[in-house]
Amino acid sequence: MLIRIALLFVLLINNVSADKIEKCEWNNKDGIPCISIQKTPNSSFYNEQTVSKKIITKKEILESGSLDVNDILKTISGLDIFQSGQKGQQTSLFTRGSESNHTLVLLNGVAINDQSVTDGLHDFGQDFIQTIQQIEIYKGPNGAHFGPSAIAGAINFITDIDYKNSFSVGGFDGENISANTNYTKLTHNGWHLNFKGSTSINKTGSAIAKGTEEDKSKNYQFNLNSKKWINDNTKFQSTFYSRKTKADYDGSATDETGYVSDNKMYAFQSSLESVSKNSENSLVFHYHNYDRNYENSGYLDEYDSESLFVRSESKKKFNKKFSFGLGSEYKYDWGKFENRGSYSASTKGHMKNFGFYGNAGYKFNNNQILSLYGRTDEHNTTSRNETYKLNFTQIFDKLELGLTHSTGLRNPTLYELYGTDNYGITGNIGLNPEKSKTNEISTKYNFTENIFMNITGYKTKIFDQIESNSAYTKHVNEQIDIYQNGIESELTLLNGFQNITIFSNFSKSRKANGQAQSRRPDLSYGANLNKKYYLDYFGNFNLNLNYKHTGKYIDWDGDKNSRQKSTDILDLSFNKKIYDNIYSLNITNLLNERYEKPATYNQDGRKIKINFRRTF
Image (cartoon, rainbow, N blue to C red; front, side, top):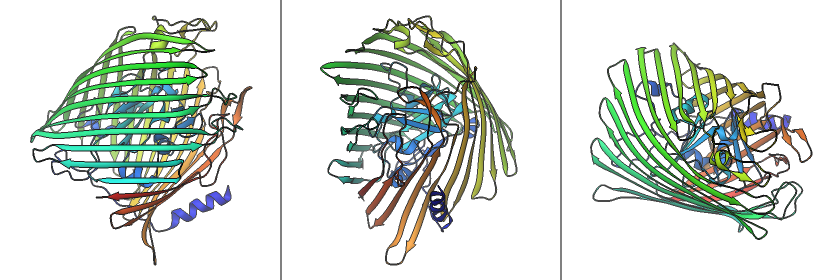
């Protein structure tokens, strides 16, 4: 451990430099490379300033050498990744110790939940990152802006146009390789057309601990974006996104014979946006489809779902002190699955939800903002439910203080409502939604213009949890509440020569009877570093370092719930630009930590990847 800390210290104390990307204006008709601008739904001019979100830009994604979304999310304080093996395997994410189905996943602000999943969680193991332009992370009550299922927060994937044409190829042998390309063209009649495509092949050891079989995954992505300004104030844009991941899965923590998964997802989205000096209006249409198949010893398990979504929203600045917004959305989900073999389960059904929401922001002065948010959802089985969020932000010279109270909910899945299995469990259309109450206090202190610290304390109560009853005959709302509380802190150093964030997270997730929630570490800390070196005879090169310590946690080891060991994961990447070419060396798990997360499932040891990228 002392060697690891010393290595981290040496890297931090050297002079560093980070390139800056300036945000572009909304009216980007000339196609200037910029950070994508994504407005948060259910917010308006003044209260949008009080929404906390962490943005991972395309530049940061490229410099990190990340291959899939997990490579990025595992470095973020308050997020814990558990993957049943290596690349392409099933993955759950826990935000601030909450349930894995309490983090809502979105594509350009629209939920992309798969209703053929039994418990409603998103499988992050299928999301490779090459065609993603930006990632936004909303933790805790900041996810309330997106509606149901964001009890713990939200992850928003952005598929905007990338105006830097490029192609790249990387890997470390013929069986572990990736390639991707990006091309944008501005036509003579004002259309911005963008194509992104990628493929990735990964061959690893067995997913299960002490296994001998080699597993493989293949991922393919396609993304087509278009944009056109109808006039100076109105813009049309659309995206078509598809991905396919084929992976070798093991049958269980002890069964290596396994099966092959074929996971496909397609999404189409279009929108109209209109802006003026004091107002913004938008209309969004969205459709997505999941088609998943699992071949297992001659049996074929099939999972299918579709979703239609429409949202209309209007924001207005009334005067220098008051802004408000109104919006409505309709979402129709349909899904079915048939699980065959020794374990059989099935379901089929649909869900409809109509949401109406509003917000208001009031600036008492330049140092005080009061934000109010309210939402009503009419669901076809759980009927009407209301959620809300209140925030007050106060600035004292160098100190910014935020106080937030919010409520949230998660509606039952199709399986929880209508599903059956061969153990005798049946769905329950009388289920109530899971609900939550969260209190949060956040502070930001600016020591200087370039050095600041964020500290956030939170406490959440979750009730009406949906679980199987003691007889395993149907799903019910449990009476045992869950309590989560914690403190997150981040110290950030930014200037023309450095970009460093040092973070820590102390959290607890316990049932009302004191029982610890599995796969919820109480402690994590680490550092993210971007720096530019200059060496004689070599010139400038960028270095990126991501270090994270994850403390011990409870998990099922095949025989019992036991305490799993802590881990220290260090990823390192070097980037060197020569003319229009960028050469990268990426080393993941530099310390070659051998660990299982979750228990009984192997994780990658040290991996070295070389990458070449050319812009044109």
